[in-house]
Image (cartoon, one colour):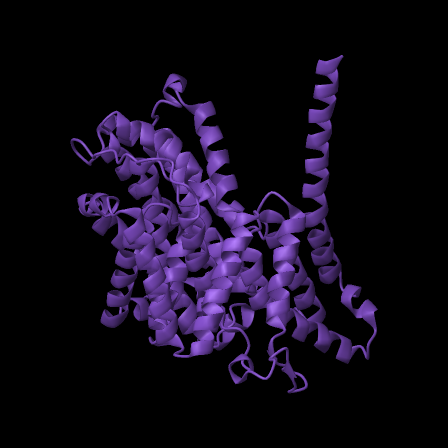
Length: 505
């Protein structure tokens, strides 16, 4: 009953009139920006991060929750009507959803995506509320060595999970770790890598880095990419609502997608795209109309979209309970916590339970707001899709710059924004993942602090890092996260070479 009592207290926070207003603003802004072509949830959250800077912590995080869920929903609208997924997890929605839109069934496709998102978000958020206290109890037994091993696991899983190359992922991670060294050393009080610039003594601002890498870098990357021609927006014809047959074909995929997406999202090495592709495969196997798959099957929208949103709620499990960001969006959300001096993890549940449970309750409120608001406003979101690209990305540059200046009015901060924006462009240009850089900057100083504490307690004995079974298990999982993908890729290349050799014979 403790969990339900804490959740009830969370609702008292989330249902305060001012917090309801923040949630409404969050879901509206998140959907409005997320629905724009080529903008995924990570870019949406990064772009709107400075908006929450001046609010109190509870209001800011509640607005953040609305932005997060709104950005997830907005991506499905773009995928269905424009065939332009804002992120890899929306690719499967575009496969069937855009075919439905071309057949004049864009309304039911958007409706099943919206209701599936609501069902998945509701169940997954309740799952988060039930699971979180158990993980927190377990994590409270961690010492410095266990925390360091946990950080190493986060570094390795994020580096291996993003992009096609573990080496590129690790390189991006080490860029973030190097940036994390800038500023005053918390143990000795000495300045490191500040180069005599007073603004750097507090370290690199995570908000500035996130906005630069995701917003500025993405904009420069798209501006440098030749346009492939005019994109056609499929009009929403007929009724937006679903028929009785659509309902009967959608409700089981919603539940199956939720059951697949939530545990995958909650895993340290999870990722929404795995759940969506797995859900699509399951629905294709179980459907009574296999001939419709690839031609606009509603199950191919309902299941993957539910899996996508359940996975989004699942990523909050390791983020809130252990402080581990497993996706790019989660890394930016971690930056949102840190702008108020808050570190997600087991201690946050004990030191500030009202804030955490208010946030979890606000996810349920934001989820309900989305389904009530977005179905009637589909016409408005379709109009936003027609904004010319050059206006859109010029607006993003202006908004990102003004947001950064508003949060920290400094010429040095503006220069850092531009420099990291160029870095973001170069990383994309050479296929390096972005998320490990942000994770390295956020978790690097924390990992260093825990390592130094562990070594201070053991008087420099390195074996303290592998003394406990928990540390050994976490470090083994970290090694497996890097080695297993390398082995799998090597085996895949070996099979291709053997097939080529067979063809030559």
